[in-house]
Image: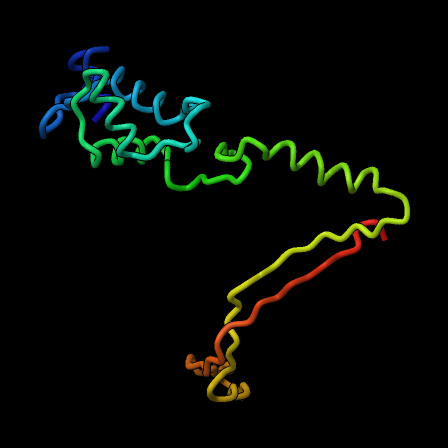
Length: 167
């Protein structure tokens, strides 16, 4: 097909022909502006560090680009930009004393007071306490191990752990 088109129309035959359907309403520049907003940093005084689709839409509308939230989602998804995936704990700006506290904690690990016991404590709450309702059936020739999906629940458990970080 391409050779035939080249022989008939030379270089013009290699250009894309008109496609069916409505032409794009948002051009290349508008799409780049959308990606630029979605990947830019927010105002440092804003406690929320990342954008969401509604806020990107509002920013574009304020810039004079009329677009809907669903269009923003479709276009950014096509660009492989997903605003819902990244939520980092280091990016949180809602605690102005965060870095001071980090400095204090790391200072204890690096330069502990003499004769001090430095413990690192963590918790894991709401661990489901459960066991299988029926025991597994052992595998036999030609059949895999069988496991029933039902559990008997015994509420939740909480795990607290302390680690002597210096020893």
